Image (cartoon, rainbow, N blue to C red):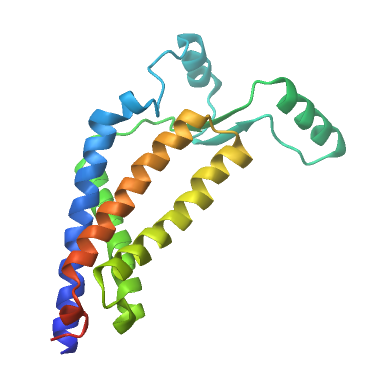
Length: 194
């Protein structure tokens, strides 16, 4: 019985990972532009050259920052109010966007997320007897994370609304797909290990 339940969980997590991986490839390869998540490459080459010449290491940079003294806090608040404000994730050494390693980590990432959602359903156990209850558990847990992180990006880091809404769209559809796949596969019979 336990072996059947573990097998069902592994199959469910795999199916869920495939679903969100396929959606991610569709969204980030085709749909992102129509949603306006990332602006077209209009970055001034002078900025790109300045970053290259500066020699700054890979990292995430926020301007204005820091705010570790009374004066820097005052300057930070004033510069926030007058602009510009930005957060820059910078990878000096570049990266291969099509590497097998990156794809492998992406698959692993999606599998871990799907396995965690499967674990939620298994922990809830018999109380998850209906498709709707399993579906809502996964969707609500996912939305909790999405709202915390993505809305937090807009509130605390002033990310543009089109970026926040676009990434929220991607994540909400991911949670809906994952919830559907897991809820359909992890029937009451499979949850009982029968």
